[in-house]
Image 1 (cartoon, rainbow, N blue to C red):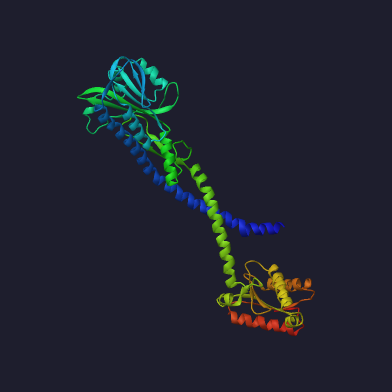
Image 2: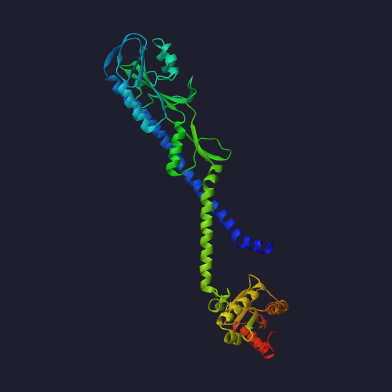
Length: 433
């Protein structure tokens, strides 16, 4: 049982394990290189998405400058789902529909990641909020007339941005936790100037998870394993988003993630390849192996023998086989051949070549075997066959052997065949060298 398990392990499991290891090495290396190449594309995609958010924000200035005014009393009003906090009775810009359109455009870039859209007036007489969160309500109710300028514009260095033709007239904040909700957000600040005077400030709060959303979307589209996490063994790339003083965002991948991604496909590829190899070998054997005995076919192996110079050959013939066929039929004859060859195979090594030379005649070619061991091997084969009956018959074989160096196959076979003839003449069931 132990020998069978060891044989199965060497024949099936060991090649499969080697193939799996090779497959994982190839797939892993290829997938790692692929992910590394995709990092730049992801970086460009994230930068482009933020630039689109900037562009949408800048376009809002045109809408702001050309919208109508309406009178609202002090208090909080709701128009088209947008809250308007009015600190004193005032003429108020009609911005709610524009804010709705603004949000819808943002959502095409960052779906479900726009936390709040707010418009702060300067001086601070009123403000628009979509939605009006408690943090904004508390903060805005305490604002004085110039607080927008003092608290945000100067802090974010957005003074006189209207004069910057090609620079950043917009600003992205660092990630921070919104008071009251602890939602981690980044804010896009865009000041609206007219004739050098600050009229309003657009503030768009974006969930910081937007970065992970972009990465996950990219992974789904390109089947990559990239993330923003820190790994002990990783490759990562900094992403420098324009118009921000925040620390760069790092995207990359850990080699543990690569292993997790490739393991199942590698197992599938290895199993599929292993099955194909087994099928190939099995079908290939049909061309060079005899179906009944599993021995090599003569027409396949004889050309190889003709290339050799050193020989350790046995020629084996089943005694009285014609009588068995004639008396008991070809079915019994075939069973006798099958069992005889099975017993021969049990006595030789996997490196030895067993060939079905004729109907009941077989040639065994041994590698690296001296004459004494060859004689012992021939005797062991003869004894193994006669040890137990086959189909109720005492089947025997006659064997002729030769150990010859620096010769030809034709000469070696002639000598072995003569030795076989002597075994037949001397009573059969014997070995002759």
